[in-house]
Length: 349
Ligand SMILES: [Zn+2]
Ligand SMILES: [Zn+2]
Image (tube, rainbow, N blue to C red; front, side, top):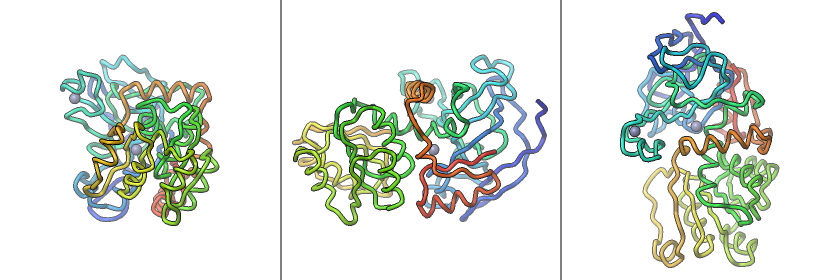
């Protein structure tokens, strides 16, 4: 296949709100271990929305101009001279954390917290483009049976899987605080993993309804209802066995820990805007609970899990992915994300 010189791309052009649709050079200069991928589908992440809105985090981390996006699926169209893990024609997705492979964490099974981590679409050009250049080490070969659109959301799906499976959930009562796109993916994973009862708290009514459709047994509006009381009454007064914190909201964390049964487990993926104050004695120490901080996906344990779950038809992502747009209509996607009237949104290239 002929690779053109120019490609479509959505870039963060300069400081301030928004994103720009441009034509730019295809990154054909491949290092010996680089791979060029033709992007089929790319999904919009909360991180992309932060960059679009140009919030404090984006101002501190992004150096425009840069191609946005990091969640994608596509086809390998060119490889550097020493690439051996993939070949032209392979259907791939990519881990978005690019590890150095040399530091202590990389060498001890913790590449996802590499000391020299580079993130696609944050530290280097991303996937909102017809072509993306990535090192072979982060590529993941998809089973050809997986739909392009589903394959593009494996990065956030991996976040959900990593958060949930830090310990087992089968037969357990689980509280999910926050039903944004990753929280919604978590509900699907929990359903498939055989959790006993799935309780979800979310302030956005669109997402509460979606949570119910996907498989939440109980949905709570924490702005109207007492979350701790609902969880207790839904669990014979015991409290939840597992807390999956996806909101990054201090109140949700405190209520979630309060609603957790003694000797329970909490896994925290949500990112907080500022310092959080909790009563460690009452909420953690005397309750003997375990708290896990979760970032990214275990490389590549998490990818093997999601790859196999998708390949074997265990997960159904059709309800979580609520919208797909043609690439040029990306503004519609960002608008829906900002309003919160969506699950996962995928752009088709
Ligand atoms: Zn993402
Ligand atoms: Zn490293």
